[in-house]
Length: 126
Picture 1 (cartoon, one colour):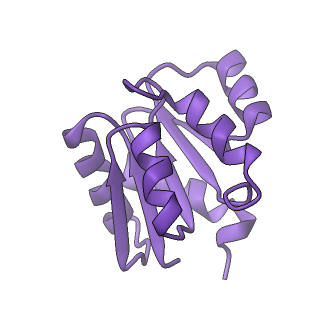
Picture 2: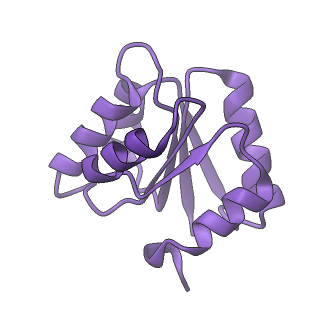
Picture 3: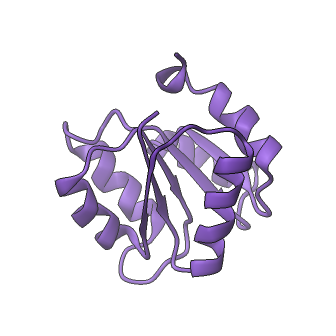
């Protein structure tokens, strides 16, 4: 995995995801960050990424709208998206997966939880 994009309006949440990735042994030489979905889409115009880790509740463009945009573009359709949110339940998880989320993880995120989840994504397997 070369590049991970973390999308969250909270700088501290982005830092936690970054630390969890490192502690989980995710070998990503490049980690990009965006404060909301619109900023993430702007980054994706210039950078190819292998994995996106996104929150749902963000200003400007929320996570659900961001995922819809990703899945509607042939250029970004294939990128695995891990949603990390405190607002998850079985119904929301199903809706997010139907919308195009690859995985849905509850907050608080843990390195082991993230590592196990990433191992289940076929696109990220060696």
